[in-house]
Length: 225
Image (spheres, rainbow, N blue to C red):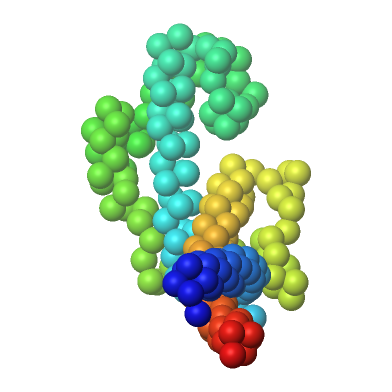
């Protein structure tokens, strides 16, 4: 076979190899990713996993800490002005039925004093170390927390129920935490299985290209003979 023909055949073989391999990688990534996403790694044998419950609890506590910071900011304003204007509805709930500004000021200061007593004076200045230590998730909380989270689920169909329209702030935080951690775990599992699928089908595609190349080379040799 002339040298130029050998180069052409080799170039075609390389193109076929690249095509089959890329096709395998792409198909594998999609198929593997879809498989991983719908596996629902946060549930096993019909039960929520401990890892999932722990991650949800940690996220919920972060959301609650942000709520606490907003509450403290609102209470400081109320303690100074005796007015509930420009404060969160969740803060106003502490003062339901009250209209006298001095009474409102007193109650606001009492709540702030209670927070300082429980979590240290620094909490009013944004120091939440003692707060985090006090409210952190512990293994003893696992059973109770798992039940709280299970109430938000349609376990049979492996999906989260819609949030009740009458849900309070605690329910909202838990629902938000569950939804975010579910999504994160599903995506992480999709990436993992996408990589595995890409590797498997990429290798399969490489094998297919070798078979095609072999047939192509044999046919070329026969023609030259």
